[in-house]
Amino acid sequence: MYLGLDLGTSGIKAMLVDDGFATVGVAHAALTVSRPHPGWSEQAPADWIAGAEVAIATLLREHPQAMARLQAIGLSGHMHGAVLLDGADNVLRPCILWNDGRSGPQCAELTGRADFHGIAGNLVMAGFTAPKLLWVAENEPAIFEKTAKVLLPKDYLRLWLTGEHVAEMSDAAGTLWLDVGKRDWSDALLTATGLTRSHMPRLVEGSEVSGHLRADLAARWGISQVPVAGGGGDNAATACGMGVMTPGTGFLSLGTSGVLFAATESYAPNTGDAVHTFCHAVPQTWHQMGVILSATDSMTWLSEITGRGVPELAGLVAGDVAAPSAVTFLPYLSGERTPLNDPQATGAFLDLRRASGLPDLAQAVMEGVAMAFTDCVLALRKAGTPIEAAYAVGGGARSRAWLRIMASATGLVLLEPEDGDFGAAFGAAKLAAACATGDTSDRIFAKPAVRAEVLPDPELAAAYKKKYETYHAAYPRLRDLTPLVG
Image 1 (cartoon, one colour):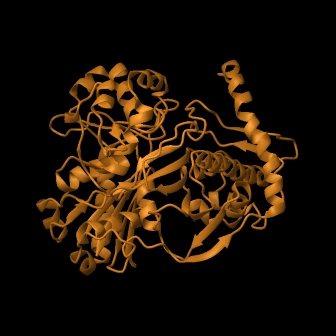
Image 2 (tube, rainbow, N blue to C red):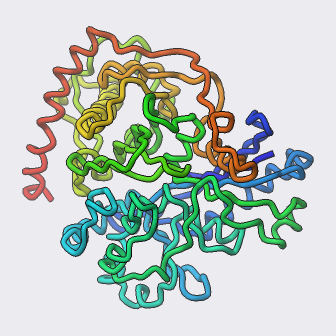
Image 3 (tube, rainbow, N blue to C red):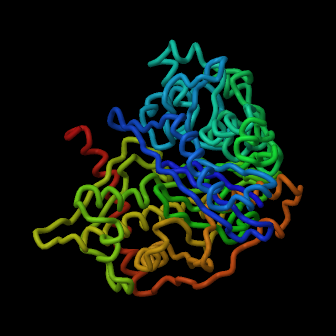
């Protein structure tokens, strides 16, 4: 038995699988996000532990015999968050999350201090960890001075589970402190942020042992002091669950944020269009990603302002979409990464008329997210990573209409895996198995069987190609207007 723990933005998920990776049990605990100021996004790390306790307690109650045979635990979680600890491992402030844009002004300063583009392989963006620490140094200097360790969110759970300060390569690559080619902390990049290696956790590969379950937790839960795998950042862990470990087919994740993921055999950074280049969760493998910040979160926002549930809104869009919505939507509700690298980018509806109804808006939101993914496809291809097909995962992938829109807008063949949960918790469980067995082959990281393919519709694709021109032209024009209305 293997346990995967995935720390998501809106909740924590615990997934128990057997030796053949069949699901034995799944448990969840909800989490909330605090937004004390516009553009801020924070969580209390104590809530993660409380949520993990709830999820694990549920599995212990519902599957006691299976949990007693647990062999290893794997971790995944949202990336880039900054958990600041003092010398006694006390949390000094709420964790600044991946979609927090407050450190935008610090990005240009950091860029000028060291070769982040060449060493870290990525643009300095407000979402990453390093500029968050510079913001803290400039705005909360007393807290910065007390900071003894900086951990990523899932690695704070690891500290609770094992008592060890450890990070793994895929998540560490998203801090901007890792030499992504060498898979080691960079002294130059740390110095640029006023930090040293002493502030950093020990590094392991995601498939390696990072520590063992604390004796007191093992006794309380009635399980052995099992190894805890390095695990992976949420996207790398999802790739492990999908078997996306080598170049070729990638995955497209329609979650709170959106990700287009492709594995690569070497470190090949290209920062021109804000493509992310990170380590994968297994040794000597890397990956590239296009990332958008508001995917299904755009539909959640529409749900919140209309008072209609997300399933109801999705149901307003016909599964056999034949023509674009008359309304155009820009999904930049939390700024944007690929390809804009603009934490101040704002969303918008265009072409609204008196006759526009909620079905038009719901379809426009789906199309706007699909257009943002089109930007990612073009950016990856420009970076030398061609991608023609992708597994479709995430909550939004349950909508047939959205998949049809997505395939026709991006030109990708979307692969629907057979029924099963292939998300980050499943990938974390597979990394737990790799950690326990030492096996990182296709036997562990197998690709799922494909239930259906969603092909681009030629007529709809032609219509979306024309609409993309409007979408693409809108952002720079609206950006120039922002000072007039901001």
